[in-house]
Image (cartoon, rainbow, N blue to C red; front, side, top):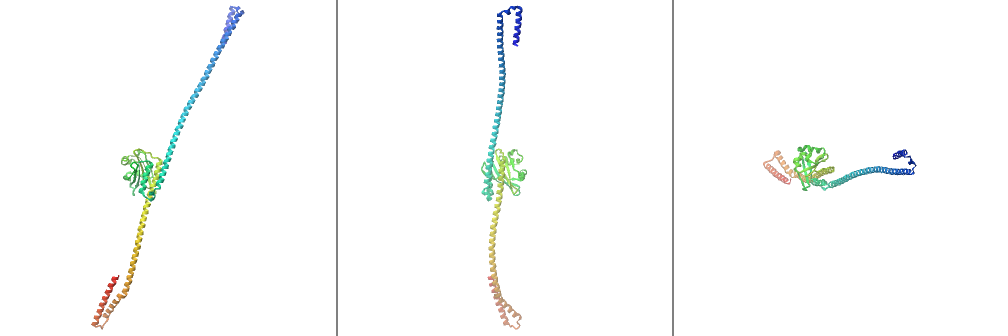
Length: 381
């Protein structure tokens, strides 16, 4: 465009010169001026072209630089975004690792707790009092062991009476006082809805006694006076029949009972049932031993009585033999004389008075002899 303008300008300039002063074209100076002018114009053009090109190059460079800057900015933004994403990802990984570590610690604690519970069950199962049937001693050891193992305030064991109308406390161990106590009994009819749940082998878990409808019947009379906030009751069964209740209570603060606690208490309830059965076997064994001793004593006394009676019978038989001998010889002689003399009096027709007197005298003497013999026999018998 620039060259077109320069060419047109020169054309008009030459045309004007030719019309006004044609001699100029023959002048050498004129052409030198023209050449100088054109050279000048060309230089100017080159300079402007260079400037324009440089400007365009700069603009193009700026454009590319801007594009690169934009790309770099985008890259930086992307990198920053990636950094943020990486940071979020790292935070998530850290959080997950923290949770995993927490879970790992919880599992480790749970495993340690379960191992401790199992060890305690083994120790309780090997109790000498449990094997020997000493129910009172076994229950006291179990209540204290459970209270310390499960980390609660109080542990107690309750048995139903024969009619299942009263729940009697056999033992209550308090961790705070470190003592064994006996508390009041409960009448089943007064808390029928609560105790009926045990017939279905239900475990009553109560983390907060103040917000539980099941155990609210004990709130005013038992929980509040004893400052109990949480409790768990596990039924004790023997041969499918409800025997009693194993109860754990926490005072002064709420305690959340875990599944491992429930499993531990179930195992302990079975040990209590075993202690009860062992005690019954012990009582039965003692009864049998006592009866055997009595039977042995009776048998021994019976043998002695039999021997005594045998001796008496032998003695009586000897006396009877002697009596038979006396009867045959000692008694029979005077009796026969009396009978003979009596027959003489009855049938004798030619007996005078002197003979009669003699017969009467002989009868009297025989009678006296008979009397003496009878006394002698009576003294011997």
